Image (spheres, rainbow, N blue to C red):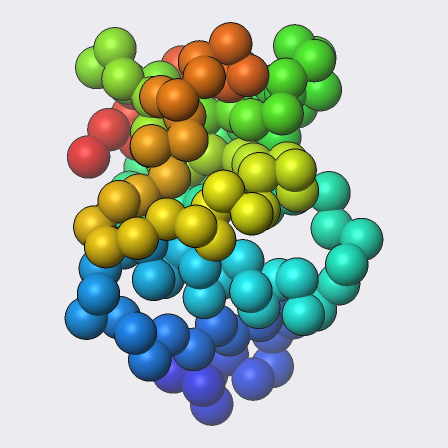
Length: 125
C-alpha cells in the first residue's frame, strides 16, 4: 500500500502492537498525528467498512462540535454513538490510554454531554 499512497498527502501510522486490539490502532494513530504536528485541533477516527460514508458526513461531523460548543462529535445510528467521530486534542491523552479491544466509543459514552451527535444512519455498521 505504501507505494500507492506515496503520491498522496497522507500519514501512515505503523502499529506493531496490532494483535492487542483496536486500542493499539487508535494509540498508533494519535501518536503519529502528535509527532506530525503539536498544533492539530483534533482528530477524526473512522473505520474502513463504512462504504456509504462520504465527504458530506465528515463536513457535518467537523461542524457539529463547533456549533454545539462541544469537544467531541460522533455519528448517531441505531440510537448509539459511534464512528466516525471527532475528538478535540484535549482528548488525545484519553485516546492514548485506551487498551485492548476498547475503542473510542468508551470516551463517547463516558460523558455524553461533551458529544455533539450527528445523525448518520447510512453509516451504520
